[in-house]
Image 1: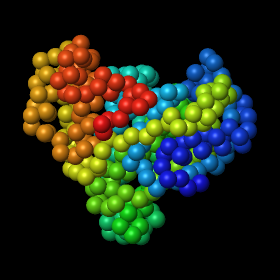
Image 2: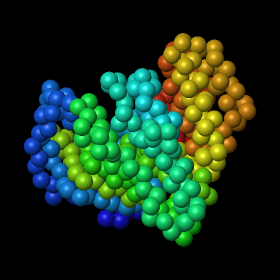
Image 3: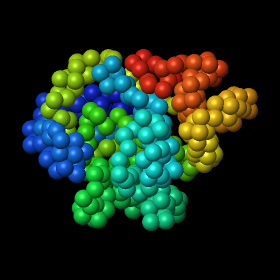
Image 4: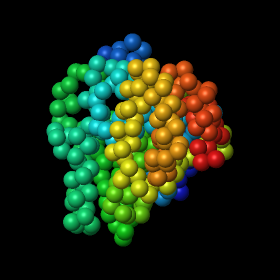
Length: 331
């Protein structure tokens, strides 16, 4: 299906899943997060071979009263992905759960795969041959079928296509939870694609999302129906224009680590200094980087108990760390 934007795609695909999905028995594998590691298996509703495309993937922060987007965690996950990290304590800092290992890290497999940056290789390929169909970056690995650990990637791979001066992206998923994880996955893939389009000086084209199994847990059906029936309350936001994103990303990753380490050490003075420096020097010129930096500063300030003062100082709403219905970062 072709949609104008992620809002239309999210609502329409949820509605289609509810109307045409078929029941699937519960996963009981104690190594699977889908069974809560064997503690509470849950039946699902699923469709096979679901796919959709959107023309505008910039507005990729989807939020509604029934499914609020946690921007603090989303930005932390995005930085973790771009850095190619497997450090689960990094995600815990942003409110994520901690596990025994993070070999399922999308960023590690895309940006640091056995010492190779797949994204960079794909970009070089398309620069040599814009019409190439070979810029496919595998994420799922045969060895994942042998791993008894708790996590393996939901993403099978990601492909880049350059056509008529535009960059298009296709994400292929072996499994996609349409309610709990789809908005966050769209957010991450959207900004990876915006990063590459800026690096290649190409206009953003379309984004396509393909799922072998597109599903929700049966006990989430009521929440999904409420979201579909309240479609007007599902809003989409953007972190801003992507111009300069690729040039400033490395500095943003360093900035994030500096802030996170300072917050973990309880160094409120350093966080205040970084906040003043960022405000006075316009450290980041790119809209996306500047707004991500604000979220990172907000998170660090809250962690050291400087939240109220620092949020006011930065000119940000206290709702920024937990995006709520109606909050627009661009306002």
